[in-house]
Length: 595
Image 1 (tube, rainbow, N blue to C red):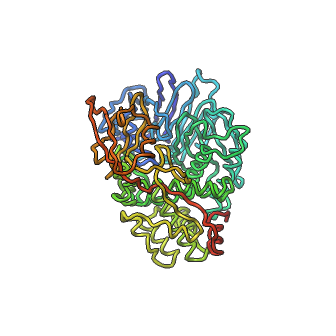
Image 2 (image 1 turned 90 degrees about the vertical axis):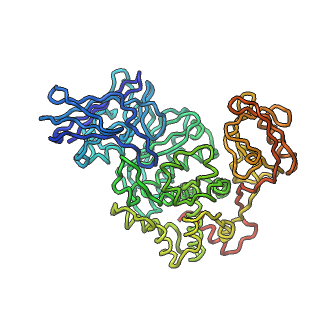
Image 3 (image 1 turned 180 degrees about the vertical axis):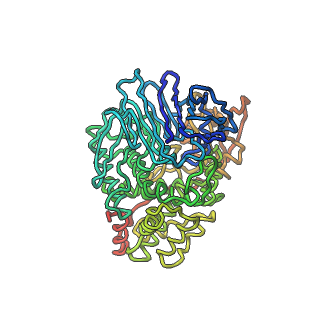
């Protein structure tokens, strides 16, 4: 039995951990901390947050040698070995650990050293409540062994992999229970005021029931499930786990008491919850062969994230309309925004979606100011490929088959057996279900050609329209009559007395004029640079006209002349066709309706 105790020192944002190894390796015990966390494909080097570490046995110090950035070796000892260490926790995200006087949160990958050779032994964890935080409780899906009514005490897991897949929230939170086909569920809210929790759990129940039925199950594949949610200004994100998810959102993303409409923020939050719950099947149980088991000391490569994240991204918002939470027009707006992100990404002409998956470690998760010109999101393009495959299968079979059948096959063959999915298997299953080669699939996955979406959407009675981007805040999805007549080709954010260039598009007027990211534009045509002035110029000056800029770069004043161009039509709007055929109507109803 490997045993850990965790206590808190909130003043310094420290978790103090003691790992007790009953039977250490007689030749010297090695220990290591993961370099990354499943679901977030970047080397994060969590060991950098270990501030101090010591080893003792029978009250005597044991020499502990650090072998590399995340690996230690304790010298041989004759009895149980104790490793005591302190971890700094100040990352307010879903991926690592955070602690202050208001609440604490951690993923096991940030706190628990693995014991080399004993990872398959049972692992115990004791959470110790600090006297300074008498009102704090614990929220986790860790299996309890001996805990008090607030969750403090002893937990036990079958092995190390299980231990690190149960995040822990501690603090004065709100816990709201609900059931999905008899299985206990709850949402845990840390922060957030005046939240309509009744409406929230009603909608979450619909989503969870929908995904369970989607995979053909009578109940979710868990004994319990938690939505661990931290509410923080201007935040958004989620991370899936085997029977819970960690979420972070802004206050305005949650439904307020008295509100009736589904706000844009609430729609986004429900889509996030839907995405993470779908992962219960797609990535936590149906997962790549290279992740079976996870190797957390170094990168694990796969070309399949287009399916594990992209297909999940397709079904997360689709579930909202199929559940009746949002109307069809709202879903088409969301889908139009997804297609807009793809349309605007010049990286789609440079990087294939399978290469994006393979390079997630170095490109997708380490994006710089040139990412839009060089990187394609496997979330976005993967979701669009899933849409195309789904609609192709529906149209070809007159509505009898769909992408859902592929996912159910994956669940039966690979998910329930916990057998890793080999590379190319998912695309092969798509061809198998179609009973023919899907004509566009190989190019969509392995080439960098733009996807042809208009014809396939037309089959289900949806018109695909393009228009220019109207402003820095235009995310697409809806038609805007007043459109710019010229194009500059950069994105920016407003600062005091200037606008700072954040992105420059390839082959754009801005790039041709040698404007660079990081430039501080102070004047446009001899007038102070303001966002509204940029937009006014683009709405009024004709393509081919000159725009004179003054800017600072590295403290030096520069003058640039930009020749404005015709704006590209890179913003997508989806609308139902006016007079659909009976076939279009039937396919559309089958696609957007409940199954």
